[in-house]
Image (cartoon, rainbow, N blue to C red):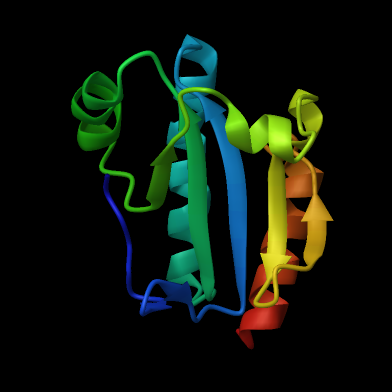
Length: 135
């Protein structure tokens, strides 16, 4: 697992907010979305946005996904292997439109909705993150 631990103390996030997203690692198009995520994350970090990113990833083989997808992509985020889709099922997020959540430091939902290829929603996520970061 690759992790960016700059905003974590004793395993707990110190960022003012975090994005939690689900990625189906068995879906080629979904894996391609990780490239878009990388650009989004880089944009946030370049503007000093304080936000953690946690991805729940379902894939047939964790090691293969790490070696063939995450390592070459060099996506520096926390990712959790979720072979049985427990995150999606426990949180009733089976609708693809709602598989991204922005949470504040107390895990209160600030925004819900998958922003990939929805420019207006993506800009709204950026705006909220940067406002709450004091940037």
